[in-house]
Image (cartoon, rainbow, N blue to C red; front, top):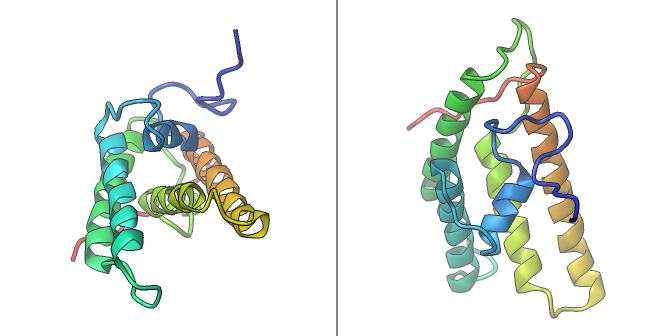
Length: 156
């Protein structure tokens, strides 16, 4: 029986999804069974479409990305409200939870797309993916402990 790193130490089931949960859905090893996981697959599809159809000098549709990130942020705020309340004055993370999941999706896709490239190219993408994993998991742990508040993007 192996060690399951589905949840970082100190994270109880029912909290925000961690990077591992999203990555298993992104790679197809698990099905998206919650609204948040399904919304994250939408982010992956947005990034995939962007890289499949756009030229190097064009950017992703910011409105579509913002709407999908906002959906994740809304669900994250509802989930965190059911957890440990943050004390007044608790700092906000500079990025929203949805933005962090969008970065995770982007970096996972880039690793997947460039797996046959030179080690120099792939190592940069793997490094960025590892940073995205660590950041998301830290934010989940800190929010669950009430030491960090999540920022919610406004709807335009």
